[in-house]
Image 1 (tube, rainbow, N blue to C red):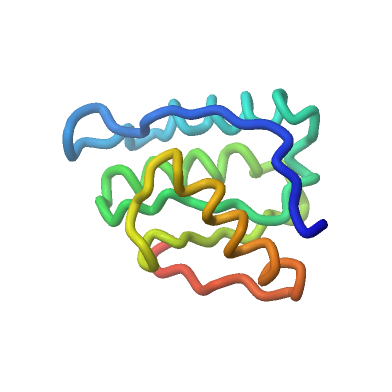
Image 2: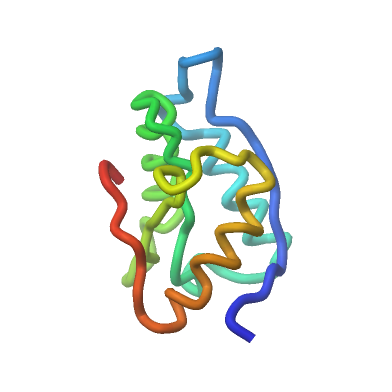
Length: 116
């Protein structure tokens, strides 16, 4: 087995059509809920798949939330996105990302991510 889905949550980092939550509060809360739902700690995460919409206001908030969620960890997880590959598939994208990225991650490869 290359990957296991153990928990999740969903939220929007937007506060309008193209306005983001620059502080990343909503995304940070979702990360905490995901970890709690899965029963794991931030230190157990090796890879975070970012939404990375390409909208600076949304991406900046997402990056801040990820930084805050994993700030205390000595080793921060790798960060990647598949948004440039197939766009933003919203919730449907998560399972596709797992199927695509898990074999690469297991082999020690993480796709390069621009701007994050």
